[in-house]
Amino acid sequence: MFITFNKKYVVVCTAYRSLQIGVKSESCSVMKTLHPENMKEIPIKKYVIYLFGIGISVFIINKLYFRSWVLKNDLPEFIRIATYSIPNLIEALILTLVLTGILLQIRLNFKKKFGSIKILSIYLLASGIAAVYVISQELKFHNIGGNNVSDTYDLVASVIGLIGTFVILQVFGFIEEGKIDIDKG
View (spheres, rainbow, N blue to C red):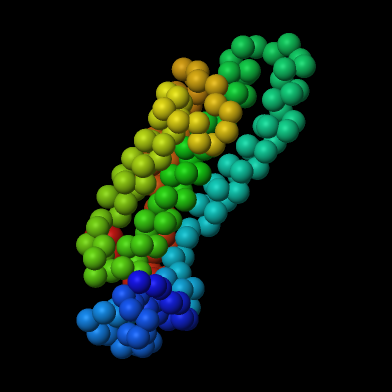
């Protein structure tokens, strides 16, 4: 069995002799791929892009500058806690946004199978998957994503990020209305 790629099709064949692009036979099936030429774009709302960019920027500024400044100066404990917990909140935010985009893209491009899934269900699923990843990381079930120091405040920040992102998506949405034919389901 082997797989051959072409711009618009993936050809999966069980025997070399049955390789014929665009032909469907018993031993060779042709499937549409998610090649960039075939994919529909999702018009993402500008605030989502800004939220993503601000999240990355705050993470970098916190990691490179603010955290060391807070440690050098004698600042109140809650500021140190917030400084160390901000990356967890941002991780939850960014992961939820990325997963929402991926799931909406899948829903749009595989409309026959996934077109009936409601937007609310996509937000819940994205938040749920992000919650499993982020919370399991905080509880030391895995260490994917780097050095992780488990802390109650980090867990609280992660939950705030997950719930906050879900609420923001629910209130403001993810996709520009009217720019694409995507049902709310």
